[in-house]
Image 1 (cartoon, rainbow, N blue to C red):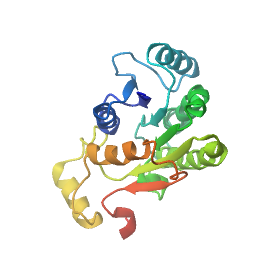
Image 2: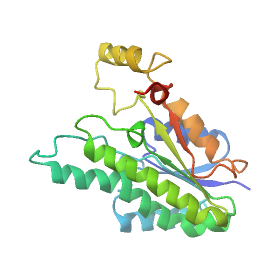
Image 3: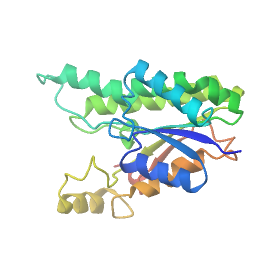
Image 4: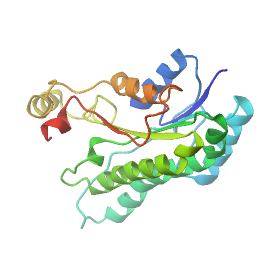
Length: 230
């Protein structure tokens, strides 16, 4: 039986690579993204509910949910726009994942092998200067993942968290190449930034029916950066 997946943030970067890899394995994938063919604002509960209903009607019940949508933000706590940045960051990076899970949960349970993969960041495992809205959102997403693993594990649904490190995506493309290379030499044991498809490989592996005993895992895909201590 063909499985059905929804990937948020699937129009670019890690999300797009995940979509491509899932499709190569015969999975029918719906992309939820503000820049997708059918734009979906995943921070809007009503829009999420309507979009999930359309997927269910068109493709069938959802077996796989990958929450990869995210925005990179930061700034000083005393900044003039800090509260606005905080609220928007948590809405997209954390609350949206909750909306998605609530909209898909019935399908995921009915599947008998429902899979949730939340894409956080190595910022969920540590903290960098002036990134507190982003860092808090990713710590929250990790905690949400663990709670889902506990709450839904006995219903056949697994929830796992992938934490990418420095990866060549739209979020990092504005960093000068020389700066990226310097950072990689100093902080990443493999000596380079990761590629989106390398992160997608881990995400898709966790969605497999056979991955039924991997639940509540937090997996850094960062070239050894966290092992080295940043």
